[in-house]
Length: 304
Image: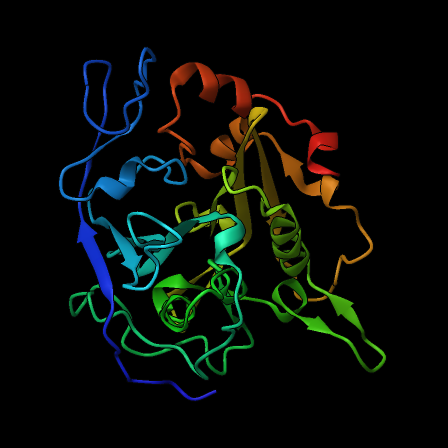
């Protein structure tokens, strides 16, 4: 694929927020509940949404991608969001919502990958080091999860939404002697299977790769672009029964498909995932609900 330099009209926000404490009263308001670790809004109300983890701050910024045509799917016109580390020049996670409104016919609307025009010079690599490296461009918010409009799908091709991934982790081969389906692909397909059909139900998703711990990094391509060793997914389902949560944690490997292993082998609680990643997921939940759903996984409820 060739790299594109077209920058169509889009709506996005870049901002910095602080983290909450016991006395904070701003951010998401759940009446009669306490939320000691929620994100505190400064410029962007979206950080109080349930899919957002607690923000790192410092030289890490959050980019919220919006589209003018997503109002009927999302009152805030939010497509998805990314935490971008300007020093590491790498994304830490992408987060988004899944419900029945995000289906559609737009898929892979561009043949290439673009730098985000909102980033300042020096905060990103101006060369695409994934090309020719032996890795693939791994969408963190998949283009297949954002098919409801051209622009929603287009925005998933920003380099801010990419991590280098092995083909046998991120791809599939359906012909020849080495057929298989990557573990990451299988996990993404399972999330799509979980997408709620009821209009009042929502699946909140946060996904990414490990960039903060040297022992969790495979290499730096040309001494620059981080290649995460591990990838994760944090999922929170809200429906008429309440909330439930689940985490996936997997090492990407170059030589095996792992397509005959049950996904339940890679399930962890959100508490365990937080220890592995150093990220506080679903921090905008009331403390009592967060404590309950993050400490356990009901595999049968998830169909695993």
